[in-house]
Length: 119
Length: 113
Image (cartoon, rainbow over all chains, first blue to last red; front, top):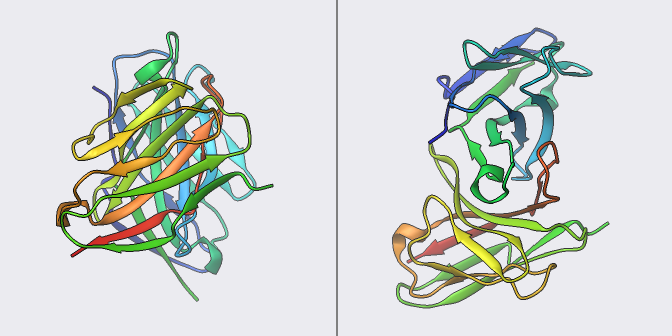
């Protein structure tokens, strides 16, 4: 079974600085998808960025970028120019390639990293 | 756009009571799922459905029932509430296919006393 590990329960960053959140996963599949979700105090789950495993190029979305290392099964999130609004819980998630639908399509989440941003 | 709508947002139950958490989506998504979120545990899958009439168990299905009679609705039933079911519950939906984004409801905070 696939697993997702976020080894940093809490992180802190100074406003305008850069922070990197770690995520590793375990899978025997060669094709899959990886996601970072943000959960602010409002509880809403917001997609931050996603990566297809067969694409070598790292995904970027404005101030958010990932460092995807397929061989190492690592998928870290870098937040540049941190803002107060970035303070939230961040979840890394894995989704298998749904060749046959069913359980391969389920999102598997890590336990989350709580990010605080200091002014 | 309504997206994924969950009701209620908050609920307090007594041990042994039953209730249904409602989830509705208006995006014609085939895939719907229920997660529970507990401190330090992330989100864990309870049940999921790949289409009307098709449901299956996730990681933590015990104590919960689901059905999917329409594409739009995917209710979660607690048959006999227990304090261990105190949690925040999320419903999510998406199109089938690998790269599609999952859309989440606002969550239901359930307390069982």
